[in-house]
Structure formats: C-alpha cells, structure tokens
Image 1 (cartoon, helix red, strand yellow):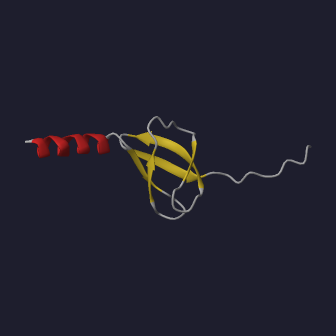
Image 2 (tube, helix red, strand yellow):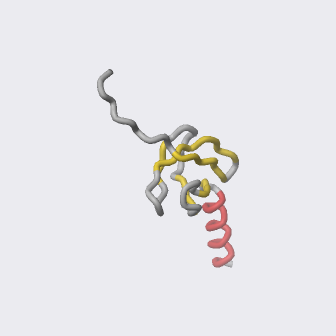
Image 3 (cartoon, one colour):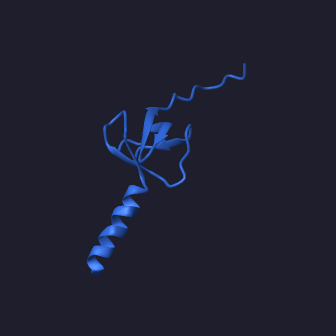
Amino acid sequence: MLIIKKVIIYLFKSMSKLFSICPVCDAQVVLAEGVEESEIISCSDCRCRLVVEKIEKNTAALTKAPEVEEDWGE
C-alpha cells in the first residue's frame, strides 16, 4: 500500500512539471515551477537561451532567443 501511495505522489508531481523540447539540440527541457510566457530560460544540454512562447497544460513552446547585439550608443 505504501509503494502505491509513493507512485501516485511521484506521478502527480511529474504531471505538475512543464516539459518541452529544445529547438536547437532536441533535448528534453524541464521548466522551473512558476515559469511564465515570454520568460528567457537556458537549455541544460546546449546552454542555448530560449524564450517561452506559449504554455499549455504540461508542455511549453520554446523558440531560440534573439542574439544580443552590441549597442554602439546610437
């Protein structure tokens, strides 16, 4: 009975996490709790900066963040 309870708790916790696929290296990305749309995160495999475009249920749509260009003070 205790094992079943632990499995149910594990499944519930894993269902509450957000998952996505890195558009650069195709690795699975687990997003932190409380992440919001338009937030910038990093892929744990390729270290690429990603933008959270849309969040639905337990998945999120990610795109590569634009490169930061140097500001010449103009």
